[in-house]
Structures are given as structure tokens and as C-alpha cells.
Length: 172
Image (cartoon, rainbow, N blue to C red; front, side, top):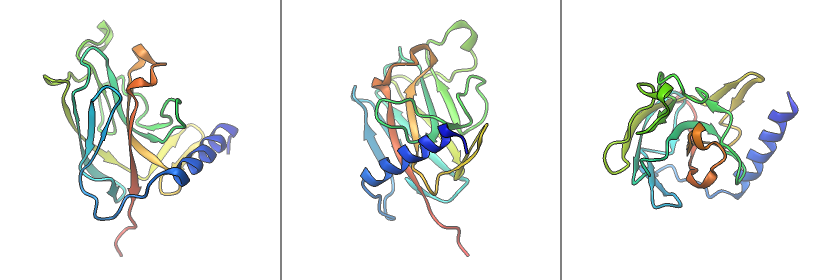
């Protein structure tokens, strides 16, 4: 296991110990960002491969974002690695690039915000994230549905929002 993955796992374990636990009866989960924007997920407790409906409201339409399933980062760090990577191709349903004003190469790839800085997306989330160094098991470390500013504001952490996901055991 590489030093980077080992470091990421240690940070994620520390974050896990500091986070409130989500009860099994939790349905829709909503978190509020630093600018009043909200991110909601239809649930935060799922089985691997389940579909989750994710909604955003009141996002700044001048700031492009990535919506993805990632390892929960340490405060101030970029959420990474992520399932599906950074989606600059506009395909798949594990990560999305949402921008109403993408650079010229992103026109047709990024999904536009709806009026009012809104979006609704369905994400199919597995319990592992595949990286160049192997697989990360999100049943053992904290992973989350994440929002971050897109690559045009790569170092801007003020738009980061997270909803931690817990995986249920498969039914026997």
C-alpha cells in the first residue's frame, strides 16, 4: 500500500472518530454550505450499488462545481480520491461537473444549474473507490457525497460540502 493511501486512510479514520453517527432511520439528509447553499441526499445509509437522489439549492451559478463520491478529506483538503474521478467527460453517474458558465471546452460536457442555483442528480454509489494504487473500502473508512469548486477554482475550499455515507450489510 502506498504512503499516500496509508496517509489518506489514517486521516479518514481520525475523521470517523470525530463524526456524529447517523441512525438507521435517517431518510433525507441536508447540509448547508458557507454561502447558504444546501446539499440534500435521499439517504445517507445505503447498500453498495444503490441509487441516491442528490439535490442542490441556492448554489452560486457563476461557480462551477463537482458533485462526486469521494474519500472524506481532512479539513481544508481537496476531496480525493473520488469514484469516477473528476468528471470532465460529462458521462457516468458517479460524478458530475455542474457549471452554467464552463470554459469553451466544457460546453456540452458540464451540466447547467437550473434557475436559482439548483440541480438534481442520481448517483449510483458502490462501497469501493478504485484508484491507481488499488481499491479503497468505504465500509472501513469514511466516504461522502461531496461538492467542491471545479478545476477553474481548484484551490477554493469555500464551496466544499460533504454528506458522509454509511453502507449497510448485504441482506442474506
